[in-house]
Amino acid sequence: MEKTFKLVDTTLRDGEQTAGVVFSIREKRRIAEMLDEIGIDQIEVGIPAVGGDEERAVKEIAHAGHRASIMAWSRAVVGDVEQCMRCGVDSVAICISASDIQITTKLQKDRAWVLRQLEKTVKVARDNGLYVSVSAEDCSRADENFLAQFCRVAVDSGANRVRFCDTVGVLEPFNTYAKIRRLLDSVWGLSLEMHMHNDFGMATANTIAGLMAGASHAGVTVNGLGERAGNAPLEEVVMAARHLLGYTLDIDTKRFKDLSEYVGLASARQVPPAKAVVGSSVFAHESGIHVDGTLKNPANYEAFDPAEVGLERKIVLGKHSGGAAIKHTLEKHGVTLDGEAIERLLAAVKSSAMELKRSLVDQELLHLYRELSRSRARAG
Image 1 (tube, rainbow, N blue to C red):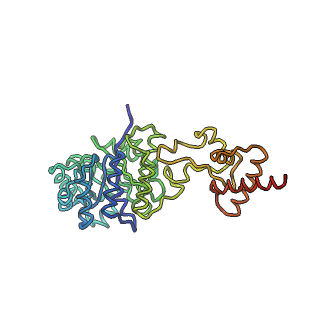
Image 2 (spheres, one colour; image 1 turned 90 degrees about the vertical axis):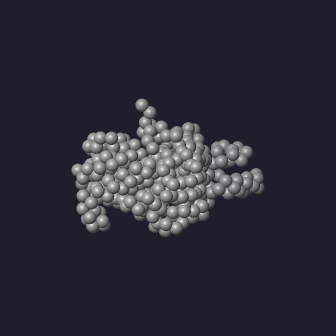
Image 3 (cartoon, rainbow, N blue to C red; image 1 turned 60 degrees about the vertical axis):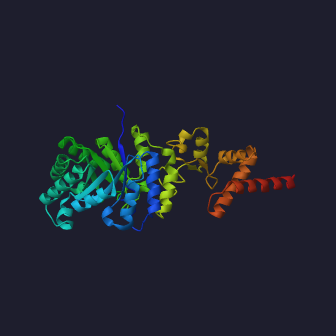
């Protein structure tokens, strides 16, 4: 059978909850449009209860005619759910704590109260035709027997799925897999979404582990934006699932670079050069051995074709370069050199790179080539 799962992007909700990040309404509309165009299944666009421009943005996106399902976030409060409905969304994420620490110290309630609120709000949403995802906040720290009960109440009340939230990012992949398998074995008919935070750098790995264990949805954000250390990045989850696990996803990954750069600009969070999958350095090669191997066959040092995510391969000229990089770059500009001339030019490149404390651009290489050519002419 074909392996696949649904993608739920929450850049416009959890991503905007990154400390200091604010999207304008225009930026929210554009990001939603880009996510829809690449094939995201469901886009979580905001929290209507915030009011003002937030509510206006949710309404505008909900009425924009996107192919994707448009979801709003709500507390397990009937008034919040009703406000989501008035915005015109087709789905709602109803969030309530599942761990005892949050139930007793944050909500200052008990488990029975949580289950009553959950049942009441899910039924209101379902009775009004909404698709319902129940966000089990902090459920990675919940008592597993209570979590199973929580999920049964959600399913019995009409929820379409439960969002498994590693709210403070404390899971690791092996534990994640085991937890998801036990939960799915305990609750018949349960559909699960992985919603992983990155506090220990495990968000992508935990998301993949959950999918391997049987989760049907992956919650992601562009560039991994989100509370504190962020969420599982869309681009990492998609490419890892496709290339490492053989999942089939109808996603236009060639637009990842443009999407990543736009969200980076709108969030004032520049994409780090070494950012997995979409960083500008992911397909940059300087080391002589690596460049030589890559030019002979890119698969020697590249996990996938950079064009898959809208990037290009870069041969970098610097301290660690070898003759293959020099020859390749010169040939791009119609210059052919071999043997001793390449070695002399390579020495000049390394010396310049160390002096400048950076790599060289093509024009600097050509300048060095011309300088050496003039020196040889004078010596001759």
